[in-house]
Length: 176
Figure 1 (cartoon, rainbow, N blue to C red):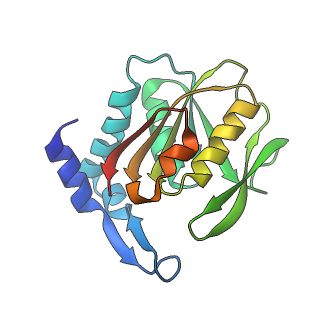
Figure 2 (figure 1 turned 60 degrees about the vertical axis):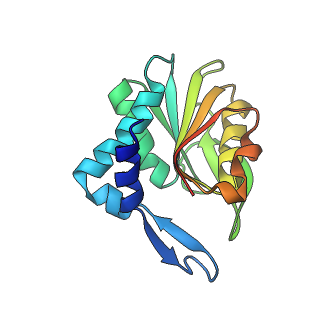
């Protein structure tokens, strides 16, 4: 991964203080998404990590994980599985609870989203406390998927979220 690409992506991340609540500095990636060069560069980072691996499906977490994950799945020619906030999927689901740095919630995945033994890569925009990602990993395992790796555009290292995903390998491209 070229350091100039990482530097350009880092420059495209906007800090928004006190969002979604006081004391939190939100890492806003919408400037990256709206810039075709930066968006392509971010997708290319994920693709570089995935190439050469036997992957059956990419799993993306609601909502920004959908943007990266579905694009990566398309480029790799593999399936995409959405994990959504509870109550948003129309078919039978498995449910997992999770905590965020600013609250608690539940997420779900269709029970037939993957077959036992399928090789899965989890893709999301941000790793913070790791609660959301750990719940996604639990859902993947619950339906029999094998989680190869969790990949994130951004990691807030000071929150130690990667330890919530152990023993799954974690990759992040922009570290704060």
